Image 1: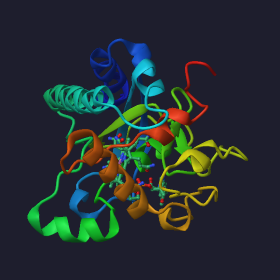
Image 2: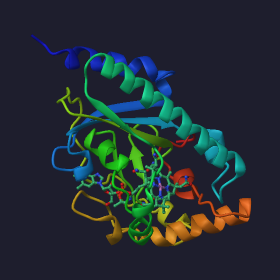
Image 3: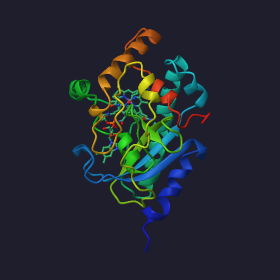
Length: 241
Ligand code: B12
């Protein structure tokens, strides 16, 4: 007999991803890839919600308050959607947990995080494993559907799921250098990503963070980090491409 997970899971997810054209989702095999904290889970659902093109176009030279608010709204919307999907999956006796789109740190996690800028969970990794896209030259997840113009969230599952797409193991950015040239922090060196190439070999996250902090201070006169230029200038997912 076909398991409930195979027949119903897609239906359950699609109920909450409305309107459908603003979302992508896919299933990922994460065996051996997750932090031990997530030991109960081996599979994942990656969900991407498209960002607003007009707002993204407006941050080509630096962030705006509207963009900042947009991100906050996106986080809230994705938290709600993944909460609702998880509740529904649990009602169907599918063991799952949702991972917040933002970084949530305990006081012990804070110092090591600041040193490395590596969180215990990577939404981008779930998304490449789900075959939805690849990692670009400024370490953004570049989706086939919306380019980097999306916010990601993930749901982890303990049971195997019906995989639809092959995972993507290397960059498809080719010779494009737009994000590298336009990055105000000069954080990228132009090297192409693949699953064996660690972030620090092609992208300096500390330089990026410092620039995000500078933009935040200029905009809000307080400690907050925001940029978005690399997301805005990528020719993929751009409404004019
Ligand atoms: C820490 C963090 C930051 C740090 C460090 C960024 C960095 N690039 O590492 C700082 C503060 C600088 C930052 C800045 C920004 N961030 Co940020 N950030 C995060 C966070 C919380 C964790 C990322 C992390 O741990 N990085 C460590 C590296 C090693 O992991 P990684 O970034 O995921 O990339 C590696 C893996 O994905 C790996 N990988 C991918 N597939 C596979 C497969 C296999 C088998 C293996 C082994 C590895 C592998 O390849 C990558 C390179 O090594 C995520 C949310 C999350 N929990 O994932 C958001 C996130 C990456 N940020 C995001 C955004 C939008 C931004 C900003 C644009 C801010 C803004 N809103 O204006 C900037 C742009 C940064 C940029 N160009 O990367 C989005 C990215 C969306 C996208 N399209 O990619 C995320 C995913 C949040 C979200 N929920 O959507 N961020």
